[in-house]
Image 1 (tube, helix red, strand yellow):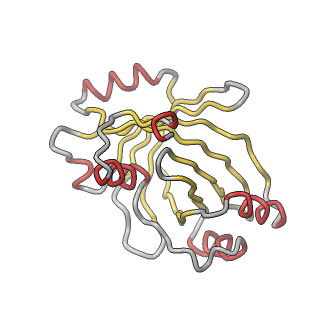
Image 2: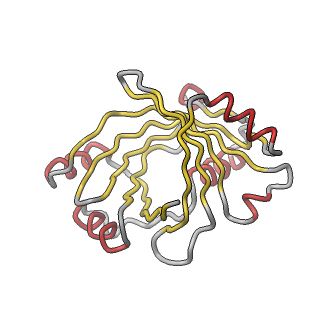
Length: 190
């Protein structure tokens, strides 16, 4: 179990942010295509208690595939999003989904995301793109100071922090735009 400490912000100009990352000496990782599938009970027990349960499938350009089951605990109060996170790497997302279903969980929403991870000053800087929502950056690090320092270094100190999860933002968007979908893909948002 680890503690996830992150700052999330919208990105208006992705190319400019990538340029600032390169100038700051950040190391770029591969582009990763993700499918994130979130689960909850029929009564929404996890959502009501500010928890999350997800299966994430990551595929890199060289077709390396990683499947991770993640439980996220309730968020702590504070400026930066902080929560307990437990992850388990598994071999097969279908079997993992069957296991969670057998335990009483059902799929709430599945969505695609592309991510490019950068490393800067001991932090992960993830540039994410989601269908309908566009670009975001998540800075995750060992403590609040490191995360906020990288945020400042990238010229994003004035950018509003977003405490909501991607699934919450996406569900709000789908509801507001009367879009009924349990599996959101990039092709849907064109």
